[in-house]
Amino acid sequence: MAAKSPLINVMERAARKAGRGLVRDFGEVEQLQVSPKGPGDFVSTADLRSEKLLKEELGRARPDFGFLMEESGETPGRDETHRWIVDPLDGTVNFLHGIPHFCISIAVEQVSLSAGRARHDIIAGLVYNPLTDESYWADKNQGAYLNDRRMRVSGRRRLDESLIAVGLPGIGDENHQPALARIGALMAKTGGVRRFGCAALDLAFVAAGRYEGYWQESLGPWDLAAGLILVREAGGFACTLGGGDDILGTGSVIAGNDSIHGALRDILEAEEHAAS
Image 1: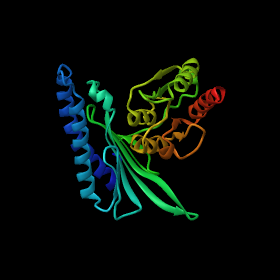
Image 2: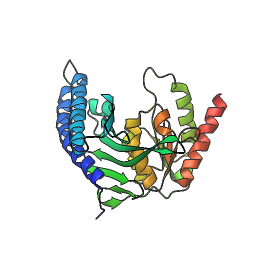
Image 3: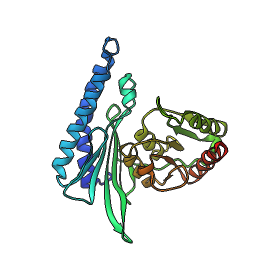
């Protein structure tokens, strides 16, 4: 059985507790589909309730850590070198429509000084799917796991055999046409493209070898932090569109194994250059 660090144990206990509430609320949302008012307000309440519970549980275990949370934003901690990065309900639109594909994402960021500059590292992460009771977790330099089973990224090397997950810009985003052009380029060269609407689970699925690669832009740090350490600890690679390493700062990510990651970059960046 894999040995979980104290941080992972804290995250998993909090996620399972919040997850029980989300499963209960998800059942209620399905019934609200026929209500004239609709489920939107209810989902917002479920999201906030999950965040409140997670903040209480994580804060009780590590009272000095700061927080960066999707709903309530940033809360500085007495410990300036560590903070929780939390998405209490990733896949909110799926949840809203009664689609059973959503999760809780929790990570720990450590800040250290390197050559006089601040270095930000994700040292632990967990993505929890409460409907399937699947817990994807990783400690830095200790590997990645699905429950108690070691995860590895897919070993496929051919794009035409590869399944690629993507994200699409929503209403109000100005990047619809560039995104569609890139997805068209991916469709022409890969075995298939999927859009499931839950970034943290997409990254967890790359780590578990279910997808060969993943690309999306305009994400928040809470969407990405836990999934990134999962991919890297499972033997995968991740960078921004353009090849940089500031994924949390830019909200742009390309992830995959050593072969597919590079091939995806080539396709996506070629399309970007063609459009400019």
